[in-house]
Structure formats: structure tokens, C-alpha cells
Length: 114
Image 1 (cartoon, rainbow, N blue to C red):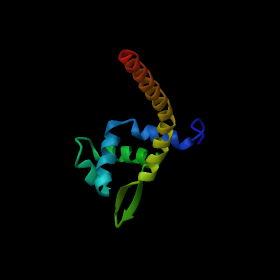
Image 2 (image 1 turned 90 degrees about the vertical axis):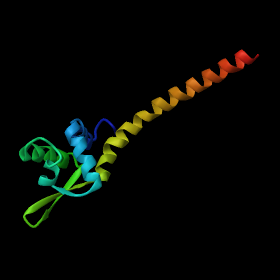
Image 3 (image 1 turned 45 degrees about the vertical axis):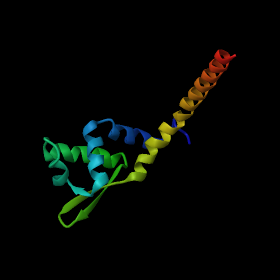
């Protein structure tokens, strides 16, 4: 994985940067919703909700499907994989530090028991 040159990362993190958009994703993880359904959960205008949904769609975190005159928004869980993969790359640093801490703690314990 090339973590420096993945265009999908930028859109995904832009979408995830806003707490309202993260909350929308939680709602969409439970059920598909129209703009009106989503707007019912927030004290903001439908136009503001539409802008948030547009950013989520651009970040490839949701898909939008027509249903009659309505547009239904659906979570696209595989879109979250872009962000997860990027974050997972850095997991190795935590693993290394935790392993070093464990080794140091065990050495200290052995020293105290001798």
C-alpha cells in the first residue's frame, strides 16, 4: 500500500473530519435514509445535510440511489477501508513500543526478583 499517493485517503479523511458527518455515518450504518430522514436527526437545514451527504459521497463513504423522487443514502462500509488501511500502517509503531515496554517491564521484574 502506498500511503503517500492514495487519492482516496484525502476524500475519506475530509469526510470523516466533521463530527456531523461521522454521526450521519452512524445513522446510515443502521438503515438507509433519505435526506429528510437524516435531517430529522439534526437541528440543521436540509441544505446543510445535503452538503454533508455530498462530501460523504465524494469521500466514497456512502452511495446514493434513486427511489422514485427520493434519493436514498446508503453506507458504503468498504469505503471506510481506505482510512482504516492508512491508520493500520501506523499500528506497527504502537506494536513495537508496546513490545519494548513489555520487555522492559519483564526485565525490571526479573531484576527485582533476583
